[in-house]
Amino acid sequence: MPSYLRRAAIRHALGSVSSYESRLEQWERTGEKAGKPALVYENHAMPVFYRDVMYRESMKEKDEAYLKLYDGHDWKWFCVRLRHTDVEYLRKNWSGKKKQKLHLWRKRDIQKRCEHQAHRKGIRISRACAWNTSRLAYDGSGAVVRDRKKHSLCTFGTGKRYHCDLSASYNIGERYFIRELLKPLPATERSLLEAKVPSVKRRTSCVYADLKDYWTENENLGLSETEISWIEGIAQKVKSNFVTVDIAQKDDGELIIMEFGDGQVSGLQQIDVKEFYKSFESF
Image 1 (tube, rainbow, N blue to C red):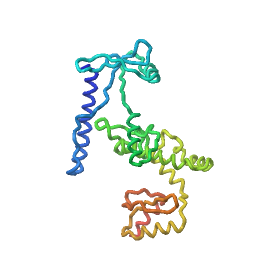
Image 2: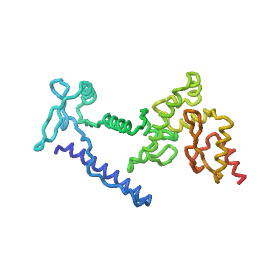
Image 3: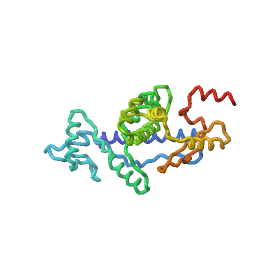
Image 4: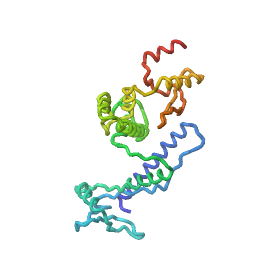
């Protein structure tokens, strides 16, 4: 086996074991008995082809390249046909002298497969710009600092420790909702809103906190006095002084209850901070 391919296999194996140990540690911390993580031995990972030792350009200026592959008996160079655009990209980005790697990650095929499965299950698909979603904290505190020992964790500018992928998922979801909320607005109304919350128009740097700012500025929720009374009446039926009610509006304008929750999981929304804390005096 070529040394560079052996090194790539060792790195991938170390990454798999490190991921397993992290998941096992988190599982043990929860105290659960079911769902114990297992170490997966067969990952079917795409190998890394390093220039000159595993990957070599064609000397005839053709749309092809040579990869060192195992034919069952020995490692030999095999000619592989490529698209012209791919060849131009390789010549532009892999023309240096140092040994660079060519990682054939078939992300397009993964996306198509996921979209196909979602279509079969009736799941709606929408694309969002993922730039900087992992690099920026969802709370608006700026760039995060990755943990060197546990790469899945990071530290926000405020000192808060959080999971990188969870923070990124908040940002990705926020960009979808920002786009859907701004799209139907007239140009004048949209410009006024973007002037109040400039961050919502920066497609590659807006985060979850910007969506909260959008709702804060857009205080006109379009609810009638009857609808507000209906919401308050439902909240009063709950035997708790501190509760949240998630309401959604259907296409026909009718309001429905999505869920009830503990009040501590919600932000202050449209309530003034001083008014909120003053209300505790009556308890």
